[in-house]
Image (cartoon, rainbow, N blue to C red; front, side, top):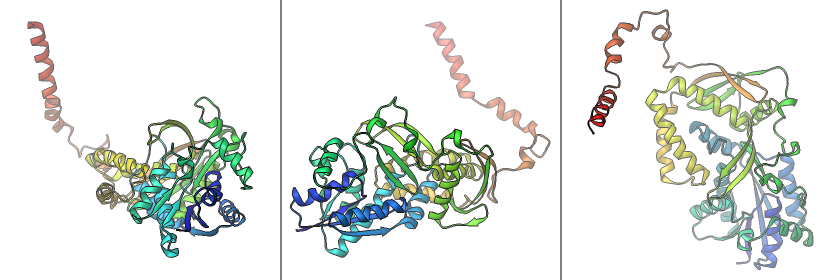
Length: 400
């Protein structure tokens, strides 16, 4: 085979793979594909320009709406969260792999390359997707296979005239899609290092946010957001607009110690303003319309779904099984949620739905529809076995 398709972001790791594929792997033709899942348009353009400079046949695939509709909105319905942050990079990788396979099949290419390291999660997600959709493919991972360091990569890029933005001083590695932005690398890896303000692009520092709160209204249908402040928006436009509004109010900055799939504990910085707002609103509406047991059980289902999504197992049958339950509950997650965004905080001002399981007539302290006297027997018998055990324990412990 003389052709290889490189899953290309335009960053350091993937850019050095272009000369490596020629010099070390012997491929005569390197084809690059960049999948647009909501990165900055300038970054998409820059990736295309770099690929041209480096002499590849380049393709850009616009998948923003598909990503928002089929991946981000699926995460909303499942309250997708991993260790305290909305998953963004992880849910984009299966789609990127799928689009790369589509391009490869059209061009008759069976060899792939990617820039994932051997320490990270993306090697699992990308390769699972490619192998699922093209089982007979060959996959190269130069950074992993050659046990590279970031410093070595920068030096190699300079020697081979690969245009890069990183330096030994500012070595940030950034991954971005419309659901979130992750920043890592360099001193950011140190648990006690204070991230410089310059790494953030989507969110304002709290001390720079407006002194007046922003109020918004979100409308949901079957668990999906359909309008913002009365304006119907496509899935991608909905998320992008909320990124701007929430980011202006300092919402969505997350700094955590994350446990990767390889068992490594790493420090990660995220910006996910729109996702943070949408997940908060969605859960508020679920708590209004779902039963107590549905909410309790769905928390377990959502956690299992999030684990599979984090690992990139998008085509796992267990995930489909979980989604059968999740989507079944979402048929009633219809209604409106009003929120206040202020100084990095989100407050739910109100929620309403035709499926609300709230009855003012039953719950109000000023109503007699719910006859309080009928609770006497239930209260008297509450915890009966627990009380019996307590007294038996006291009795037999004394005898012993």
